Image (cartoon, rainbow, N blue to C red; front, side):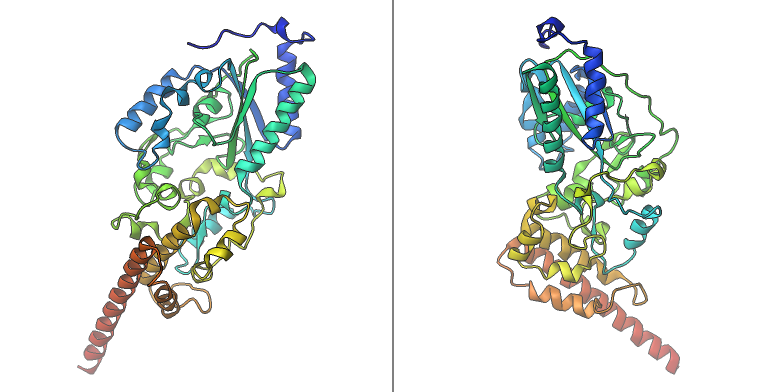
Length: 397
């Protein structure tokens, strides 16, 4: 049962809530958010969809998706007294991102030696950035109206941020399940402030995907089962970030050289030609992650990984899964034709040498994936040798 609306006269001094809502949106933009909207807390439709998704097991090992019961779809149970949610989005493409970024990202997928990291993860951890800015926004509200009940979230608690952002008018749910905005595509983060102030709510926007199914067709693992239907167990972002155990063998070849996340459904989306650059330098690329090689990143020991990934969202997967992911990508490079582009020194022989150096790693998880990758290279080498022999015989004949 939702908490009763807060009587505006309870705010001391009294303030016009429509004026307050407009001020909140302006303050949000001043703090670096691209847009701010306000939603009520009725998520009964989203709750039924969530329960059906969980019942099908599409959440995989993400037990936290089911562990909070009704709280995920009932904000007032998560934070008693909540009657509204202030939803904000922040663009994350690095400031210097070129206009042809989608084409460049697609091209890197064709470089066997390239280590592809999802664009959102190349800079500072968005959790920290958004949480701090939302806290500043809450402080601005408190300075204007006095103490009020609130709590800040950024992908850090059981909050259905996408349905709330949709209700707040920040965009519509695309067929890939991400939020889309006509002026900004999908390259932005979301954060929320749950409040006990009965602010006027915004109007949701209609969907504008039409008959397009580019995101569905491009998905390497066919994780998008249909419009708005995602089996996370097949999603490369899940496999390389959320999955703690071994990556299923049948899916490993489909991952290619993606070592952390996947942007395919975003780079192919027509709406992302309108993607906006970040206004904060926090999301600028660090550690050369936009142009790194598999061998270079595979060479990091745990200390170097922790040092370089300090303040990065990547650090949360840990060094063990980092090596697991890169081992798979190195194994997939075995299938590349000799003429495929590769950076100097990143030959298949160098990849095999790098893999052998990790063959006796203390982690069974790493050893398993390294062994798989070495077997791929051995099989590819045997095939090449057979082909060369056949070609020589045919020439002699």
